[in-house]
Amino acid sequence: AGTGFHYNIFSQFYVSPVANVALYDFDLGRLSEVSHGNLLFGAGLSAGFLSLAGPLKATLSYSPQTRKFLAYINLGWNL
Image (cartoon, rainbow, N blue to C red; front, side):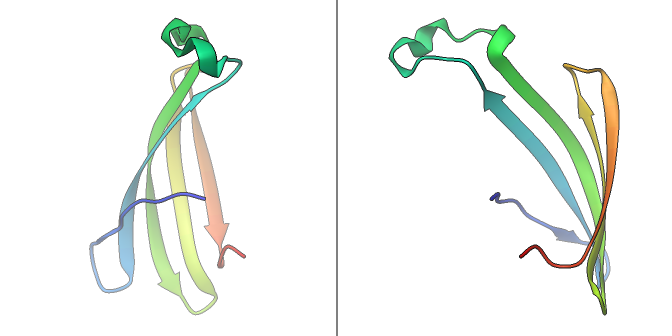
């Protein structure tokens, strides 16, 4: 699940910023000890088109942890 916003460039074309942050391997009782070692984050940009088969979306994102760009293409509705 997620939330975000779309900016419509034209009637059926849109772009969306993407940002994610996650913590892993931590104790809720010791949140003050959270460090960069167990923090993951990334950012990207999606562009989409509302086609007859559903939304066609391409996403390009970057992860500082892996120092790599990732690309995804999605077609259709999430069920």
